[in-house]
Image (cartoon, rainbow, N blue to C red; front, side):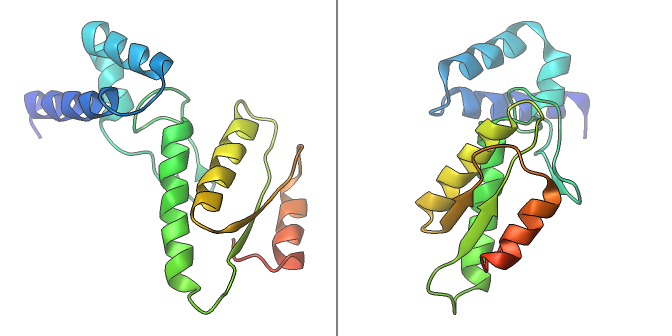
Length: 146
């Protein structure tokens, strides 16, 4: 892809976010990137953050290639769609959610819980830090699908 094509594609993506219902602080950050920091604009919007074997990982900030409540929400909506397709035989799909000590982990856990709840999925959300093995136990113990 030619550099001009990439810049145009990234600007379109950024403007789509800018004209959406995101928070004011995020809009200000996008305006700054559009006006003054084209390199960071490209890094923030050139692709969508991918869910890997370690989960959703990335640099925090505004954009589709950054960790923020919007990318977490989009990934959670995707998982919600998948769970609803895979577990049509269940009267109630259930998930367990925990968080660790990383920056914004609690905020991201709450966002995840709200998206699942909006999709009619029962959520068990730990209220404080939990180790991964405790979450794994909770998923099995509570009969969760995720």
